[in-house]
Image (tube, rainbow, N blue to C red):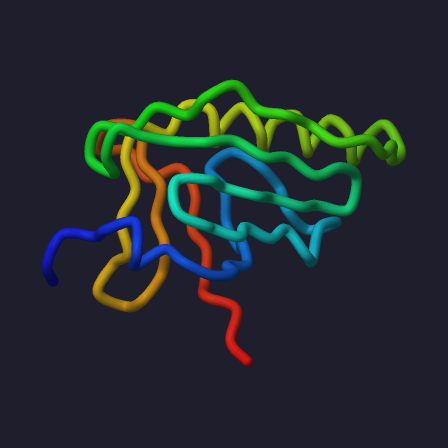
Length: 116
């Protein structure tokens, strides 16, 4: 597969796995990409961040986090989820169509495209 471009990320993705984070309570962690902006939503809060300079040398700008509170356990899971995203320094769409975010060679997060 050719290198992933920003255009390959356009649209909505559902996060289904994050390293060292139990996502069991969260069924609807969602990413939406629009150009070099990543919008995310979870049961507790939403976030927005920009990224660049490219997908193989990635740096997220500071996250803008929206309101909303959940129970303490959910807030802890969400914090851990956000910490994993902030460590990502590259991302790609794998041959199976999943979005994978990495910290160097270590995969951190997997998401599937939201279809339909």
